Amino acid sequence: MKRSEKAIIIGKTLDELYPKTPIPLDHDSSYTLLVAVMLSAQTTDKKVNEVTPKLFSIANTPQKMAELSTDTIQEIIKEIGLAPTKAKNLHKMALQLIEGGGVKQDWDYLESLAGVGHKTASVVMSQWYGVPAFPVDTHIHRLAYRWGLSNGKNVEKTELDLKKIWPEDQWNRRHLQIIFFGREHCPARNHNLKDCLICSWAASQKRITQEAKK
Image (cartoon, rainbow, N blue to C red; front, side):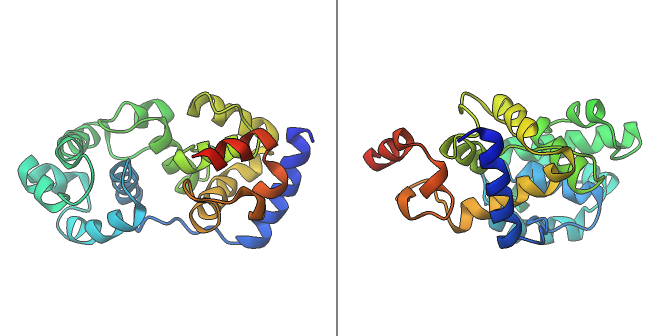
């Protein structure tokens, strides 16, 4: 089956399962969303949502974040992976935002901020500003390979492949739907692809065999 044909069927399945796609990270502004997404790298959204209420009660703007010491920020987010590095980036990013005039709908500007890569910028652009983007995290990268939608060489290639097979007006919801599906139905380990709602028909025999050996 061609990738484009798979994409249509997978898209219908995802739309049925997830007609609404709320952002899993708690936030109330473009800045708090940016911070939450940055903190979510190599950490679960659940853990981020446990930590950010205290952080945002103290520093929900770049100005307030900049007033905190790096040590104070690190203490608040210490339960999150890579906390020391993220604390330094949060402080530096706050200073950059103050100088730059706050969070903006600008790819180059966002990706120039400390601790903000293409994936983080993509989430903010798509989910706050509504700009078509396809942020690729580990869930999406893994499932795109399982389903034969991409060769899985790297996240950059996966992003390009997924943008080719789904229309631009579907990108913003598709990336969230795939994340939800991965968490609820398609885990990385101990997953029987033959019983999966999508993997059972979309995954190649080679991928099924590879998964069975893990």
